[in-house]
Length: 56
Image (cartoon, rainbow, N blue to C red; front, side, top):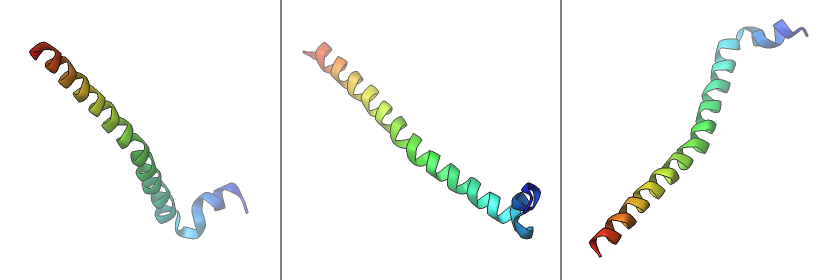
């Protein structure tokens, strides 16, 4: 089996490689989304804390 045959996947390359790409996008999103949400939460908490200090 040559490298070209491997990437061709017996004529199913479009389906196989697009499936891998979609799976990779989902996995990356599952890692990045919570990180961004956590960062946003910390910013909101910091704003709330500053606002409460000014009101006191």
